[in-house]
Length: 185
Image (cartoon, rainbow, N blue to C red; front, side):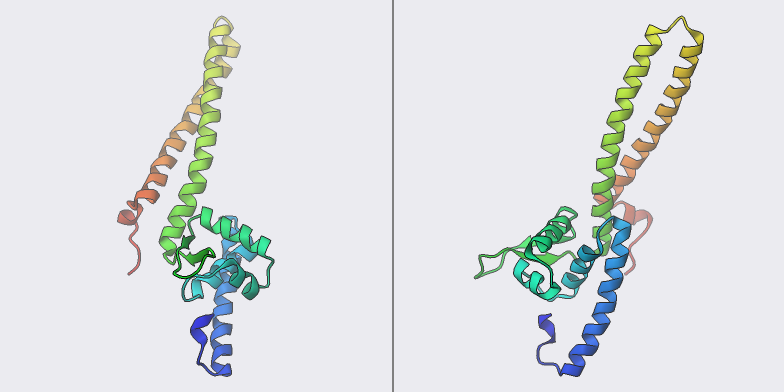
């Protein structure tokens, strides 16, 4: 980490050990986000780095292959936890951490939850149409009609939940969640 230049070896080691402890903790906690330990360590390293880095620099520092590093960087880019930035005088891609953990949380969960909600809502809507069709087909059969009505009610409750979850996702995306639960200053 280039901000340690000019320090004594002892100072560098003490600061590095303190940072490594946090980086390891970040890596372990990223499991909550469904992110591997190595990608969590990558984010932690970038968090402490002073300025943007290239894939080559990351690969060398982390001791990982460029392919693994590229996969990790792509994952963090997709989750909006790092940004690709422009650097004067270099043709290599540069990457920089998004240091706002509140924004990282909001982006991560809104991306993941929206994808899940859209898939589940599509499945529920399709099933609801099928239930309506079967209710027409079996209108004279009270037993089947009753079963389908119960299933229909359960699906409608699930749809209500997913509409609520979409509101939560929107609150994360537009920042209104912080009106309800303010960031610490």
